[in-house]
Image (cartoon, helix red, strand yellow):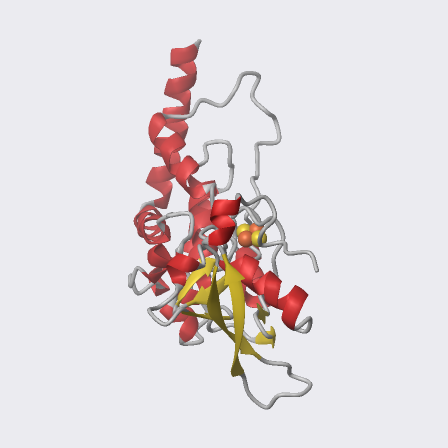
Length: 269
Ligand code: FES
């Protein structure tokens, strides 16, 4: 049997291998009335990730275990799960550091979303809310002859927001979502913020109408769970707060941005 946990490891690293007890929430809607916890013993090295452990269980112990993963490098966002009570990317999460004193780690699906099977949740509401904010860029029909000029403040705002990988960790840690209310959600509001701050976009006013509506930025309770949950250390709460302020002065914001763009362009000529 191929021992993939030892692949690429030095003999010293392999000697240090221990085992972990991985407790996984299981649920098969065709067979189970309700979810239950199943425990597996998994070998590990200091570098083993929680995703490695799940993959070991699936490959060596129980092929029916179901979970999502793809890139294994904290880029695609598909492996977000709940580990020991907080949301995280399991491909990015070290297993030994996640164990309690008895060597146990508990893995559950993202909370507040319907479970399809085991650790796989239905993200339909997540993507539907995302589509509401028109996450794509809407450039002007006549592209300028020269490049768009961007201020340092706009670059800073765009840079922080565009590293979101849409993993859903923030959305499923949000207490407004937990209450079942209609809410655009931190992921989509962060994307709306990104587009509103982008000087190439032509519909900031329409975006502020959507994100500043009653089921948008004003529905946020400012509990900061989204900040704690974000594996990319982004700050959706701050973006939501900015959207609230900009929505209140939408026309002035559009005029200021047009004026700034004109000034920066003239300065470059
Ligand atoms: S597998 Fe892609 S982010 Fe974890």
